Image (spheres, rainbow, N blue to C red):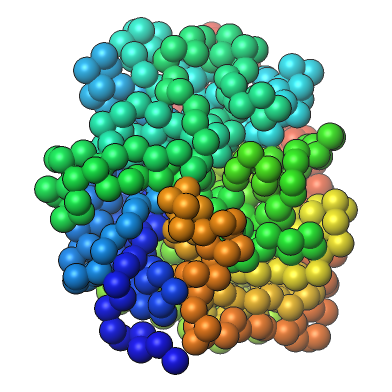
Length: 528
């Protein structure tokens, strides 16, 4: 058995830059040694509906995480750095390659009106089929439509439009370039050809020359001298362009065979299955994004994942304090676990951010249903966990229609919690297998990197090289029959509860207006 504490001779770095933080993992080659570094950054809301980030803050966090992780590698040779980032981001650069906009994230829903209009048009459905990206304000396509309509002067100032991946690659390599996987989540790329879609460009009011060239996820670029000095990596180190975090998550969880579903849960969440080619007819509820030229992921993402519990904690339990945030999350979940399964009839529809799969309707409002005096904040917190889990279960149901689901492999910090594991297994009504803490998108990036660097013949061989024999066994949580029954009841009771509220809607719709009958009639204010 290899000593996991002894520094290996060589490592590969996997970078996973997400919505609220970045993770850099150093993986020993054919060796159990690994080091994980995490840096968090804020998600800003300058205006209602806007969810943006400061590009400089994000890049500084990524560079800091790389430097810390590299220092932990000691004398090990770093053979390469493979990059994975969150999808659907958009940032505009001027002709000097300086950001002139914030990094607009997938969670930003300012383009809801544009998305709604395009989605109702046959052109929108045709674009969904060609690009694999549902019509939704998350997509750069609809964000660009919004900019063209509302900020034409800013649009004229932008020379380059980049995604988050492209911004990170520019910082690391000094080159403007993207790759097929991240580009496939923009709503601007035609999957069949791997080129920018003419109709999408016309709708976005941009030219193809304003977007970076598209290359294979296994392409590489050398690390710049400036970044080498800031991170401690060697000048010219191969930087593998990598892929988007969603497809990489499936690779990292090992959900690569027919019938296997990879489910990730962080700030947001997603469930995906890998297929060799895009479906000939893509269901309205699902997306299709590229991983490599012969591997695609089909699935759905929810905007409202772990962020729902953090919101509930901030709003309902501000006195529960702990640092870092992971410890506070654990304390909130301990409180939630004191409430019974099904939260005594309390149901949360967790649509705090513009929701995506399976309905792809950014206008859906969040709600607590069935609220009674007996409910405590523990019930409210637990209902948040249950609401997210039930939402994810609806996506797995859609994937079941494509291919019978034989295994669900899950990853994400949320699954350190027993409550999350038990609730999700109960909501799905099937076992879930939790892979190791360092798995997921960072592992997927590193595996793809080994193939790109000719250190593995294919992706399974790369995963084997990064998962040593003495690696801790994956943990499977079987569904508790009582929880399965409770969540089946919750699922069925939603329709009944919503129907009961129809009477409330009719009551207020029929109520007389208290506004003045005409502009010449004024209300009398007491005391005047």
